[in-house]
Length: 313
Image 1 (cartoon, helix red, strand yellow):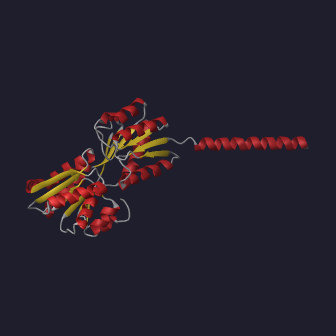
Image 2 (cartoon, one colour; image 1 turned 180 degrees about the vertical axis):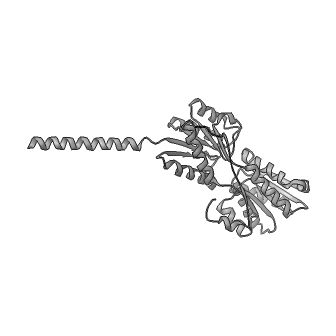
Image 3 (tube, one colour; image 1 turned 90 degrees about the vertical axis):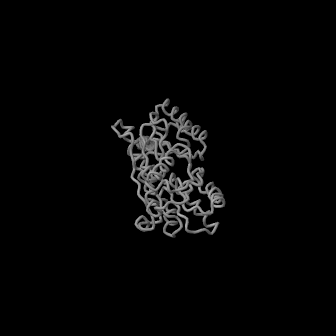
């Protein structure tokens, strides 16, 4: 009887270990992906990362998220670190669309596919797919709206992010959107706010001091536009039109309150979902379209309630 009990206990322990080992194997079979965006100090990039993370989790996969904080050298180093950690694919938004090349070279050398999102890189042959909003269209919509509001032109200031290709495309679209009245606008200042509210604020304050009669600001993204709004509030100045691009909850609230004028709205949630869809196709050796464009829309006071101010579209 004792012998039977010992055999039974031994078999039970072995079965328990077998089940435990299998469970551990199952939990560790998920793929590992990397994510780097120019800065995580922008809710837009945080939302994209959460969208990607959510989609990957459906397949038991994980996402490593690192923040280069607008430092291109740091982004290159972090990409190398993620490659060393064994990622199978990299989601990348460059700090500097040209300066990011060493990171792309490192991924290529390691055989790691790259899905380039939101802002395209200069060396497009080094990435496997590009998933971006139609940034030109976002700027165009803002320019066309301004042309309707100010057909006789006026004094214009632009605050950009000079090393972000997405912002350069938006500015190009903005001018094209102005169309026949573009030559009626006098550019009084064009400066670099690095896409950050806190950097833009003093820049906008200086522009307002030097050009008290400026009539409109075009910001390369919503944090820039919100920095301009903050500067206008501090100066107790009203009647100046402010455009941005992103469609963030904060800018939509500002539009609803009559502070900002409009934004060329993107959908970071859809950018994330589409990036993951493309990523799995790449890993599964399925055919893909290399360039994927996500539509944008103009949000102003006439339709802001349709989009809501609580979250991203």
